[in-house]
Length: 371
Image 1 (cartoon, helix red, strand yellow):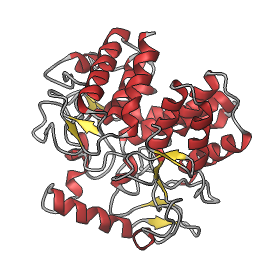
Image 2 (image 1 turned 90 degrees about the horizontal axis):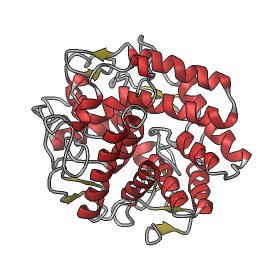
Image 3 (image 1 turned 180 degrees about the horizontal axis):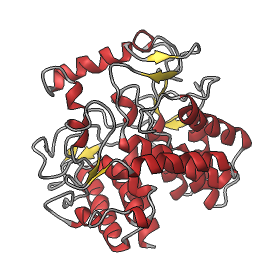
Image 4 (image 1 turned 30 degrees about the vertical axis):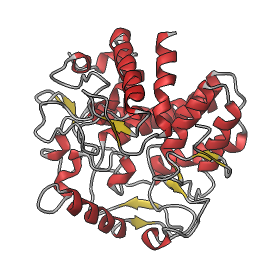
């Protein structure tokens, strides 16, 4: 974390591959800083992510504070991107609050505005779920859940080109805030679960009952998307019955927000089965029995430390022993991989950028669940 610290006030995910500030990365970094006894750094990272925030409340997923114009041709704006990412700042602020750290009112206001933008301004599917404006907004860039939107079927290079094209079809408000994309009509289960979770977390700190009510509404809409035959929650949109029902780990994030009475039977068992998501070095990003499963391919099978942290947190609500197993396996994977961006679930081979700051989440989840 110290080696990746940037003087502008954040830890770069990886100084060579990812030198700028990413939204959900820095939210996870704040949890790591808190665990390391540096709440000052935790607050500083959170404060910095809101630097390029729009008046509407929209929070860009990249803050280009070190080089404001470097990707302005792609995004059509300077200082920040034109899309967002899961608003993990609600959870990060709640973690600081639970640790007895005073939260600056300006930070609370920025976070409230960011979530309010998504809840009130982002276009919705008929199901009541929020729509993504781009696959990058989910964080799961190359997820097999988006395969129906890749012309001719998924291919790494074709999909890379398509993602750039999808940036151009985003519809924005007058201040450049993204509200819908007619070419990517996806109401991601994982993204909606994280919005609901973070809204609840922030409301616990601020006492905002309207935000809590909105989180409950989204959670109710999510519950309606459970499919017993495939044992997963299904995205809403034109791809729902095809790639939108692929069994991916992020599609089980509703475990963060559903009540026990809403819990589908035997769902948690998927995390304790080597025939499903259980890997030796952490939970697989895609169910083992899916044809698209590839343990080394970006977002199509490897272990991701931020998802592992969230799943450990979610599963601990219902089955502490399974959550502990997830946590320990992920910690072993982080160590075996050299604190990689993501890694092979069976060998621990490091993949992507190495080291990557958010691999430190294995320390956070290990301590919180095993203490």
